[in-house]
Image (tube, rainbow, N blue to C red; front, side, top):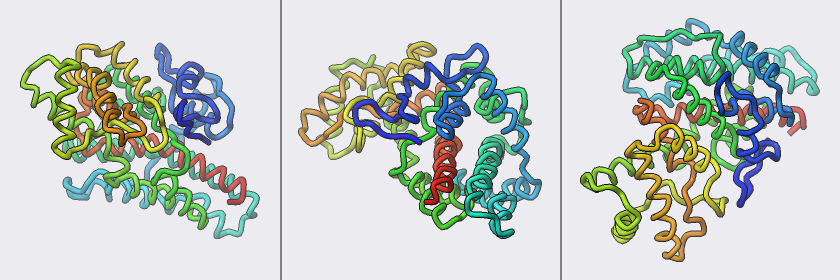
Length: 364
């Protein structure tokens, strides 16, 4: 469903993310390609029309119901249980409703496995924003919940249920994040784990829960909050000085000399700046160019790669998506860093279940 090109970045069904941004339908008045539109593309290899995306959104709303017992489970968890633990528990609690599991036990034909996997995938994608928003409001807002709004798109509704910012800009940045993180081929921990567990004919709820547990690992899903913390610490250490290339160059050299790493730079496959970073940078330059952390991140973009390149040890010194995604979130009030990986999980559900559907179609 996607392929990571060292020079062009991740491609959704052969299309670069820049092409996806330009061609995917957006919300009314918006500029960002809708993540549910990218899901249509990942599933079908076809660019959807606006009408098809609207119909898909309506279908996802219809399938978004979460049983009361699942809410009771989540609502009764201690507030200090990590949001990713809560998400994995909630997804597993939804598993008894698996259509694939029911059909398999009833003796369905192997050639029909993909149909029931698609049914589960539609249900899971419809449910995960509501479940994730429930967790957020429980942990950070004393269980004061905001109801789902079926008139909104999938990502816009999720943003509204979080309840931290009711502007259209926050809905747009949420759409942007969810679209950019939707898929990243099959080699990363969450995608590979979902595929591996699904290969045992575990249904999508079982399989993606396993993927979520992998995503919770510090080396996979926590990178964006580590980058945000580094930027904040750097901003504090500058003591109010306006960041410049000269100042950040020396700061980067001192950081490396102290045996520390600079998070958000480099990539195991890419050999140029991550296109996801550049798309977020363009969004930030348009919507909040004077934000202090964005201004600092922008100077880092100029100052740090030459320092890393000069070490002779780094194949790709350029920033990746994590170098900016946390900055975009905090700009609109989503400052609860322990929740960032849950947002990642909502997004990555799109790619992981797409791969499950195609694995069943191909008999893998």
